[in-house]
Image (cartoon, rainbow, N blue to C red):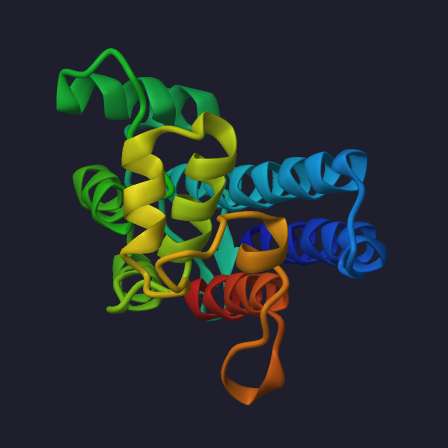
Length: 197
């Protein structure tokens, strides 16, 4: 079941990579820029939902990881993913789910649920520096275009003082190893997801 979640993540990420590939050719029209921004939103959402489903599924007793069946950590009456979500909210006293894209919040939720594959999850998503933080900051800027989101993104030192923050300056540049930034995020997601198994 957990490997099926990883496979599903990989398929979705591959589809988003295929969707954005024709857009990563400069110059971009306003419509193509907006489409690339939406693909970035989707990439962030795919990751967040994967982490949520992986951790909640791990508590149900129906999950199978690389080492075999993951024993249930939730009481018998909470043996579905959505029931585990309710259990988590009861244990934390919160009205809202954790921010699954934040490693600290995801690890805290996994710890509260006492999942038996906590070591794998923590080792995979607890890495520092977190390679997907840049994606979150980029997504936040595209979504809000606020001063604070721009300052957060500029703190990554991707830009010269006069550079404009745009799709071209965030998603398209090549990083270490000649990998385009967007492709690097996708590769990191797949790598981290496999490590969680």
